[in-house]
Length: 245
Image 1 (cartoon, helix red, strand yellow):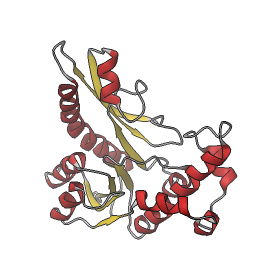
Image 2: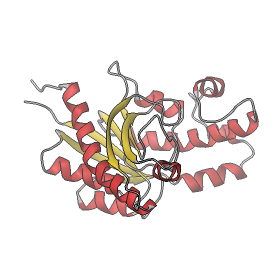
Image 3: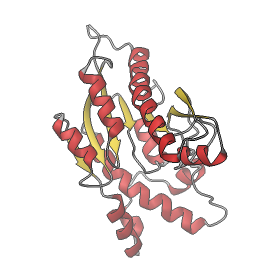
């Protein structure tokens, strides 16, 4: 008997990709079950979707944590004991340390403080794969290294609204549209230390007509995302071949 993949999910908003994954699990298109949904924003619709599906939820309020960090002089007192600033700064490719070391260090420290709270929730679950289903926060090496702890390698999956490696960043569909591309698409990839630079798992493309607006491009992209993400999670599940004896 094949054991179902245990999937954790993180969101920041409406959770349409989360819903696509929930539906695919319910319909048997993914050999997986979602064990939790966490968010960095409280009260979002994605949390309602998860609760309706009977999934455990939690919130780690990034905005509040970062605001508090700006008010505290002794920020180091809030950091986890296993945090090594030079190690993390040396690994990360998110901020330019040479340009402004102090700013980069605050960015990393404040995110690690929030990430430790995320990890405190996540580590209470038995999880095989972490899926970022519209989670709008970058992850530092501190977090990544504590999820990717097994010999099986990458365990954090993300979806990006462009055909990587083209148009990384937060506005993939907008960048695709403004550049005048006639083909758009989305990419599911593993998370590494850079921004949208991890190994690609799968992609889907769509045509952009001359009369299409940016909203048309986004709608076409979302339709592809809802197909692609469940398929990539199933691909991961099949690659694991977890057998229950």
